[in-house]
Structure formats: structure tokens, C-alpha cells
Image 1: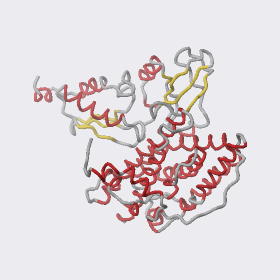
Image 2: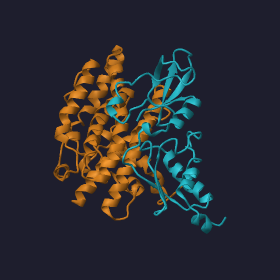
Image 3: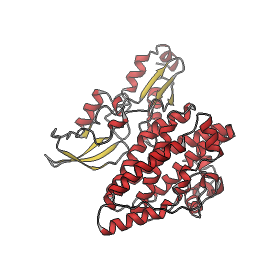
Image 4: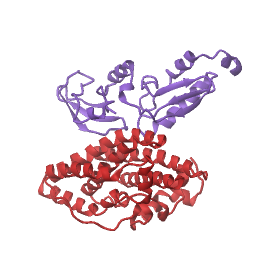
Length: 249
Length: 166
């Protein structure tokens, strides 16, 4: 049970951490100043949630690993984030498409976790779910604005959705860890979340005059099988601790 | 006064008085009491418990250090603990805190955020902290810090920051 709780908590933290790192890549490069700040803020929220989850994961494991050890001293195959989180930013539309899918899901997962019998997970989720409400709205607003915008913005938004959509099924694919955590009253019910997610995303796509993509790719980041992109993210994110192990400010 | 005698004359009111002098690093005119993030003081445990505003707010660590430092400077040896639940809400900002925000050109958050369904759709218009007009618009949901958004007043044309409802 402790092993499953560790993996479950690690997955929550890794997904938030890796997407935070991706969003941070936009700093100084966003199309407008307001979005530069927005994307950095979205990343900061996720980083904060990641820290809480990873700190707890380290405590569950009981081997003395803290949040920094888990973030900086693991290699790609030890990460348990959903693959969607590690996909490249692409253009602004693709980043918003990725965030629409992710925030729409993560908010519902955290909402489910507020009722977890694990008090610590419930507390972290209670904090994060309020932040994710802003994430969802931001991504939904941009999806609608770009989708129902000019011919070019519509084309880009649709292309952004197509680029990330195939990694969506992984968000809802419950494996033995998810099932054990659900049975224990700890984890979120992915099957119950799915129709809610479908309805909210479909409503946004309809208003945005966008089509719902159909593609699906093999993606098993939750089991530690990642795309080629994760290694590149870690190379940058972990550089300092790899070059100077144990370095502190 | 020595640390030992200070401890002897320790009373909770004194701790709270010191806390009222600890400001938020991003909003220094606002004390941790105004912000509503102090969840409790335990004389027995010698702890001050605070709750973060946002999960990723970098100010939280600085605030913890400031509190411990300021108390230590007053001969009060306390540890600072962080508690996540119940989650902080902007409803916990005190009336004094809301007035200070307004006086510093930052619109205080709309009320009743505890019910998160009240967050969306956009609650009642945010009043301009300069002229008081309700004819304002949101420019960006995200601002210079995690807790603020960018707005503009259509009456006096001034842009202003607004504390986000959380």
C-alpha cells in the first residue's frame, strides 16, 4: 500500500513539476507581456503544488529523499508524469491546447482528492484546486478566442489541439496503482471524471468552432515510459545539481 | 531584557503584537495579520502556524523567516509551521487589510470566495481604487504576483491592480 501511495503521489507531483518547467520556457518569449506573466504564474502554481506532493512522496518512501532529491536526482525513466505534460510548447495555441486538456483534467483530479481519506493529499488538493480553476478558465478563454478568431488563429488552434490530443487518453487510463488508491478511498475516480471532462472540453470546442480531434498515441508516462522530450527537459532542469551535487543557495 | 526573562513574561498578546509588524515582502504595507495567513500561536509548542496564499507563492518562505526573525529580535524563540488546510481564502483578509490595499491603489478582492462557484462567472465589478467607479474592465487575469490581476478603470482611465478572489 505504501508503495502504491508513493507512486500515486509521485505521479501527481511529477506531472505538475514537468508542466511547470515547460511553462517557464515561455518566460521572456510570450506573444504579449500579459501572457508572459500569465504563463509564468501558471507555472508557479504548478511548481508549488509539485513541491507539496514531492515532499510528501519523499516522506511516504521513508528513505530520506526530499523534494529536491526527487526533482533533481532522478533520471527520465524514474519520472511518473503523464506524457502530455512533457510535450513541447509549440506555438502559443499549442501551449493553450495542452493546458486546456491538462488543467481541465488536473482540476477535476484535485477536486476528487479533496475528499481523499489521506488527509495530506486532501490538504494539498484543497489548496491547488482553487488555483486550477483559474488555469482552466484561462486556457478555455484563449481556446475560444483563437478558435473563433481569424482564419489563421483558428487554423493554429486546431493544429495545436491535433498535436497534443493523442496523449489525452493516458489521463484517464487507470492502472493497478489508480485502482488500489481508489479502492482505499485515497485516489480520485478517473472513470467518474471522464464524462465531466468530456462535457466541459466539448462545450469549449463548440464555442470555439473547433473540431474534436480523434487521434490517440501510445503514451505511458505514468509508468515511466516517456517521449524523447523528457530527457531534454531534465538536462536543463537538473543541470546545476548534476554538475554540483548537493549545491545550495 | 535577557532572553530568559523575556520568555518568562511571555504572553500571547505580545506575540500577536510582533506579528502585526511583519509585512508581506511583496505588499510591505500589509501585515501577516491583515493578510489573514496566521492560523494560530501556540505558547506550549512555541510555534506560529501560517498558511500559504498560493501553493507556489515565493513570499511564503520569506514570510516564515521574517516572522521567526522578528520574534527572535524581541526575545521570543518560536518556530514557524505551515498548514495547508483549511486552504487560505481572500475572505480572510481583514477589513483593515482591505482598506490598506485600497489606499495603496490595489482593489481588494470581491467577497464570498469561499464558495468557489462564486469565482465564475466574473463576480460583481471590481471598484476602481482611485475613483471608486464600478465601470472597470479586466486586462489580464494574471499580474506581477500570483495574487493579483490587471484591471483598468473606464471612468478615470487609470490602470490598477486587483487582488484576485481565491
